Image (cartoon, rainbow, N blue to C red; front, side, top):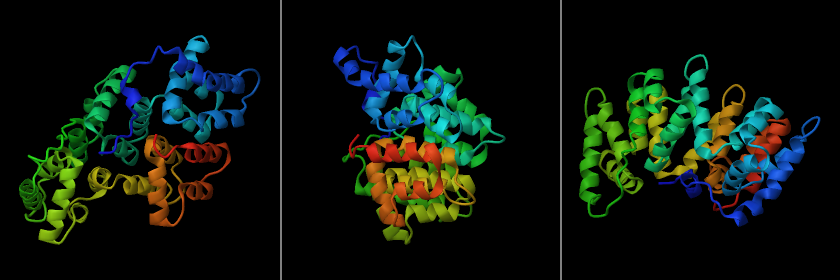
Length: 331
C-alpha cells in the first residue's frame, strides 16, 4: 500500500549537525523573506515550494532552533493570508500535522466538510493512522475517533471509524490465497448485490482488513464471477459521501496514483475551485506527486500544472506550481 508519510516523520529529530548545516541556508532565506517591513512573497515561494518533503521536515524542526523558538507555522500565519497563506501554513508543519489541520478545518465549518475529511482518513496505512491519532491528541487534546464519531452519523461514521481502527492485515501468501479471495468475493457479493439491502459492516470490514494485494485478487475474482468490479458494485450499492469514501478507500489501495489524480480534478470541479481542497491534495500527495501527475495527464490529457494554471491565480498559483515542478520522482 502506498504510504504518504516519509519514514523520517516516524522518527525523533536528529542531532546530527551535518544534517542541520545542509538546510540552514533554507532557514536563513525564510528568515530574510519575513524580517523587517513587508514580506518577500517570491522569496517564500522559492524556498517553501522547492523543498522536498524530507528537506521541509528538517527545516520545520531546525527553524525554531535558529530563531528563538519561533515556529514556522506561526510565522507563516503572521506573514501571509488567503489561499496563499493557507498553503504556506500546511507546508510549515510535518505531514501528519498537516493532515490533522485539514481534519480540524473540516469539522470547524458550518456543518462537517465531508469531502475534505474522508480523503485524509481513508486509504491510509496502519502506521499512518496510528501516528495521525497520536498527533491529533497532542495537538488538540481529544480523541480523534470520538471527535469524528460525534461529527458524523450512519454509514459514513461507520466507514471512517473502521478506517481509524488501523486493522489492515499484513499480506501473507500462505494466508491470502486464491481460495480466500474466492471466499471473500462471495462474502462481499452476499453482503451487497446478492441480498435485499446492503450489509455495510461486512463490506467495510473487507475493504479495511484486506491488504492491497489481496484486494486486487478479490476484485479479479469478483469481476470474473459476477460481471462487476468491486468499484462498480460499491457504486451501485452505496450513495452520497458513503459511496465516495468507500470508493476512495478501495481505489487508493488498488490504483493509488489514478485515485489521487481524480481527487485533484475533483477539487477543481463544479462551480469554482475549492482552493483549500486543492492545496490539501498537493501537500498530501507530494511524495507520489510525479506518479500522480503521469496518471493525471493520461486520464485527463492535461498535467497537474496545466490544471493549476487554468484554475487559480496569483502567489497561490505560483507556490503550487513550484511544489509540483520541484518534487522529485522518488521522495
